Length: 189
Image 1 (tube, helix red, strand yellow):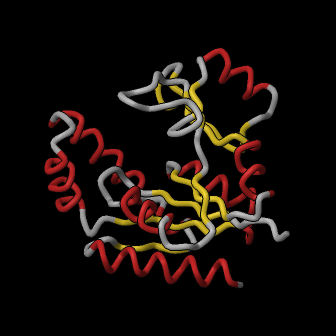
Image 2: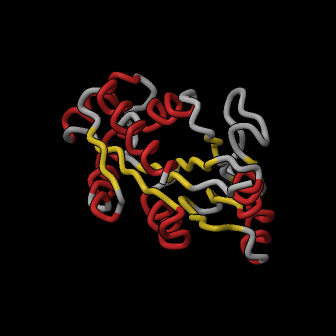
Image 3: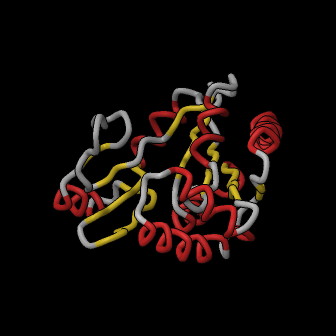
């Protein structure tokens, strides 16, 4: 059985990345989503092993020390996110292609580790003003949080040239089809 390939997605919050990933997962491309680990508490209906692998900060640090992560980041004090090697191997050994939804630093790191076995894609909003409108339209964050996300978005967008492909999401259907074409091409080679 052929080992699966890796497809990495990064983007600023509000760029449509999750919507595009969910579309692609339903496109019969033999894709499986890599579930990240986090030390934050579950939110709402989130379940261990479905949305995330929930670990305590101490468990997360112990797994870092054991070398269990491909990449990880401490986003805030004691608030870790990371990609477990075991999760990626489980998916690849089954012959499925692994889909990652990671921050820009994690995306660049995974690409560096796996080289040509991985495709890195950056989903770019058309501009900061459109991103602001989308974040406000979600109606899930305070204006203070939105401004923080926009500040972070400018930093994240500076990483776009480090990715294999950039998909500009100024029209969601066009962006979905562009991502689909790129991934099909990558998987088939």
